[in-house]
Length: 298
Image (cartoon, rainbow, N blue to C red; front, top):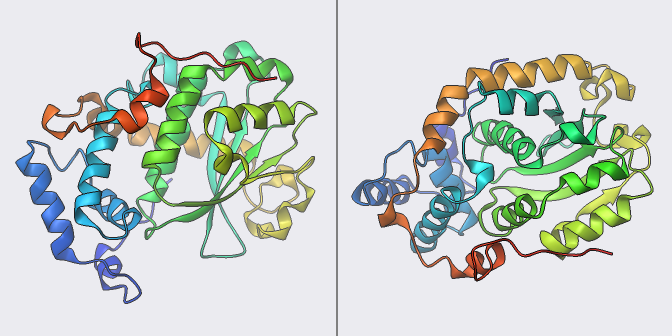
């Protein structure tokens, strides 16, 4: 599977944007001055962060510094080696793909849990698969990337819920609330069981109410054709697109193709020069003794 390339010249030339090459150059020079490298933050990432900060250079520097510091501490951004046994196993338990919406200005990221056995589920490693795959597509789309998430939970049972460990949920909370790129418009959950309210309560308590309020629950997938064209809907969902098996194979091939890139990008801890006061998110992640806080959800 080959990804299309993003023409950065067209991104800069977009008349509806306030993006300036000189602002991005300032950020690149700043990273070099902090003994970072361009592999830490690619040009499209700089542009995306600048957009998220409403083109405020100083705010963008702070956001990038925080993201690099967070990335060096969060387990969901460590040991991202898709040739390792652990991530090879994780890739067998999850399907991630992009689907074209009828509204072509938006993209859908489709996520289907494949593991019938909850014991096979490692939430942290599954997050690595989802985040890595999504990042590859985000960087070939013009920012900000308006998108929706579609979670297919057909194979998920109540026994799967405890697999969502608190550390992973806390790390996702920090990522979503402080460093997420793009505009997440909606979260569609399809084929959900009667336990779905418990899962939403868990998301509300950890990731936040704003995230949970984006969730739209569907008991079945029959109405996906309302916003996904039949030619881009998987065969198992009544569409004319590729099958789950084909999409899963393409996902694994793509991640393995970029395996060395991810390993290089995330193997290095954030440079100390880039660390900032992280108290705004540190307290949400770590307790006084450095352990994660426990949470009971009714």
